[in-house]
Every structure is written in C-alpha cells, then in structure tokens.
Image (cartoon, rainbow, N blue to C red; front, side, top):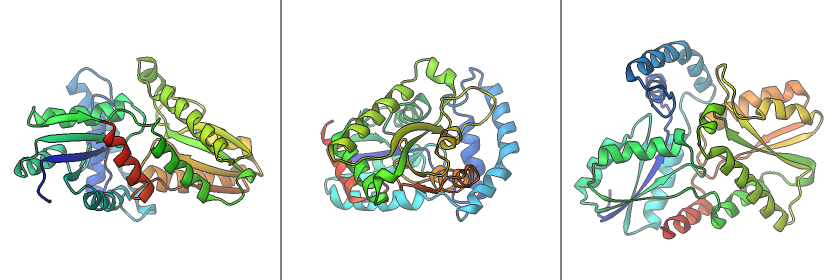
Length: 311
C-alpha cells in the first residue's frame, strides 16, 4: 500500500472464493442483526446455524456453476488497482462484510500508514439497513474513532454515475426498441420496508431517473419495468418478483439490468445469468440478456471520483 494520509474504503458484502468461505459468508450474514432482525443474539445464532446447515451444499452447487468462486473478488481487486493509480494522494482499500478482507484487517493497515481521514464508500447505490447500515456500522465499530470518517450518502441520483449505467445499457444490445428492459433489484422482506427502510422508495426513484435519461438520449425500449430477485423463505417480499415479471414477455426479447449491484457477483453471474435464463427459456422468451455491472469500467471510476468530490 502506498503512503497516504487519506483513504477511500469500498464497503461491500463479499463473496466466497471456495466452499469454506461460502460457509463463512452464510454464517456471518445470518448472524447479522440487520439481516435476521431478532433481538436475541443466542436465538439468532441458533437460527443461523440451522439455515447454513440446510443451505450450504445447494448454495455451493450454484458456485460450482460459475467456476467455484464469486467474481466480486477479482473484479474488486481490478477496481482497487485502477483507483489507486487514479487517486495519487489517497489509499484505496476494500472491506467486505461477510468474507475477507474484514474491517479489522483494513483498519490495522490504515493505522500502519498513519491515515488520518477515511471516506467510507458503501458499494450500494440505494440505502438499506441490510446493506449500507450493516457495512458502515461494522467499520465504525472496529475503527473506534481512530480516524476522521466521512460516509458517502446514497448516490443513485448522481448524474455521472447514472450516465455510466446508461452507457452500459445502451451498448448491451443494438436494436433497443426490440427489447423489454427490466431493472432487477435484490429483493427484501416486506416487513423490513414496512419498518422504515427506504430501499424500495429509492429503487423506484432510481428507475424513474434512468428512464428519463434514456428518453433524453433518444433510446427507446419496447417497455421498461422493475422487478425483484432473490426471494427466499415464506415471508412476503417486495413485488413484482422477477420470475413473475418475465411471464409477461413470452415470444419477446428481454434485457436485464441489475440496478442494485455495482460489481458482478454470484447473484448476477448465477442467479440472473443462469437461473433466470433457464426460467426465461421455459416461459418461451425469445432472447434473454443480462447487462454486466459497472465493475472496473472507466465510466464507473469517473463516477466514483465525482461522487467522493461532492463530500
């Protein structure tokens, strides 16, 4: 790590590099009080153990389908390398919530470099207690006032960021008017939203902003809609579910943009690109395509620089 007095810390959930890390990911996630909103740590731990035991083998089969590891790790490393080259006066590091590198490790490294100022950049465009709040709280807990810390607010309204998304969508297909564009967001249990989580509201606003930008650029899709993926368990989740939304487009072409993700991960590479693709074939969708996330693209790097300069 280069010498610096300021650091940019990218916060994300993480992803497994092997089967042991998958068990670690699931264990840490279901022990997170922001995910399983149970007051008792003891009962949360018991439930977490049960869930992990019942899911880890089937979840690993999903990982095997994409090469046995999440793409989030190598892609984030590439992004870090480029940002460290671009931001000459700033150390850029990553902190994952459920798999290494954890906050404790990053904080020790920043202390060694005598970093005084830290900018926390949650890699979630829209705010949710299950993502942004969980990641920020985790870092602040271990930092214990060792740095002057600023936290980037939800940036789904940032123009440069949204132009990067539009560029990705625009270049994913040639004849836009032949495709139905679906913005797919990671779902949440309805009870979390009902308790005051602003995620759904911000997702809806983001879809409106991107739809207006597409109109500005004279890019016209056959239709534009929003759906939610990743529902698990018996609870009511945000709707419409992506599998239900796809049923509207039999014999038509569909383009999916993962609006809640910045870096490709198991949910984009397996769930969207493989699992829902199989569902689309069963429905009779003529063509099903998934946009890549912004990843380490130059437009995303420009957006990050623009967003942190607003702090």
